[in-house]
Image (cartoon, rainbow, N blue to C red; front, side):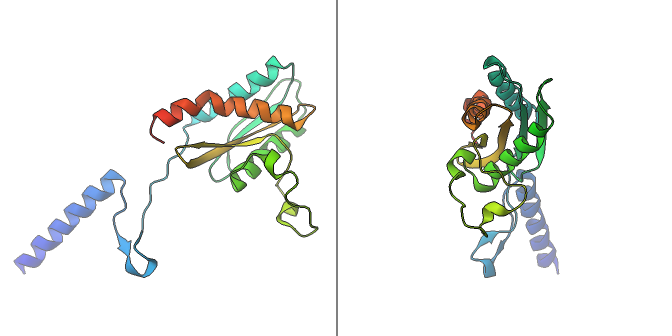
Length: 177
């Protein structure tokens, strides 16, 4: 009985130490030794806001009023900004561009001609396959995406979105993402 208690105590200590470190703690032999828990890195609100502001500033330098949406890795909005004269529609379109970019982990400009058949995934509501959405990744990990809408051309929207990502990319990479 004493040996069983010692073994249980040791197991609890090992499990507690692993849980506290954020490491995978148990493996399921039926799932090919995949961990039961994983660690997922997420952008802070400050990082998402920095991206959105940098994108908006880039468009302002071009004389444009736009809407900007930064979504997390699940496609949920983290930051939404609309410049004073940008139409309300820019909010919907910027969110859909960001959602599309994170869903496909690709700039939306690269997807513009990908889904042409009548029943393709491109017909799913909420997806927009025009330039202006850019994924946010660092260290090979997808963190979210930024979408911009309001410029006369999607390529300009995408330049602004990319400026937002570029504003934090080096810092994200330095943090060991």
